[in-house]
Amino acid sequence: MKIKTNTQNLNLKTNCYWYPCHSNILDNKYDCRMCYCPLYEECSKINNTLWGGYLLQYIDIDGNNKEVFACDKCTVFHMKENVEYYLKLKSKGLPNNIILDDLMKTIK
Image (tube, rainbow, N blue to C red; front, side, top):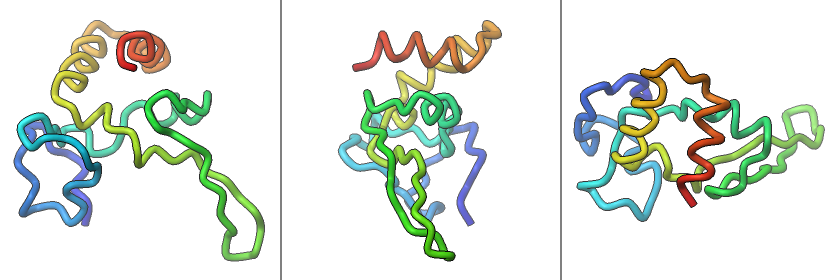
C-alpha cells in the first residue's frame, strides 16, 4: 500500500515500496510529505511541462487511444525547500492555482 500521509517526513526507504519514486534527489534533500502532488490537478489543467510534465499516450482496455498528464519526471514536491514554501503559501489561505503560478515563476 502506498503511504499517503507522511506529515513528519519519515525516512521511507524501508516503509515505501516506491521509494525513491523520483531520481536525482539527494537523500538529505528528499521530502516525502507530499507523496501525492497537491498541484497535480492544476498542473494537468494547463499541461505544465516546466518541471518535466508531459501528456502520456496510452490505449485503454477497450482499445481506445487516451492520454493523461504524467508528472513522474517532476521532483518539485520531493525537495524540502519547495514543500516548506508551498506549506507557507497554503497557510496564508492561497488557492492552489495562485500557488502554482507563483511557483512557476520561482522554480525553473
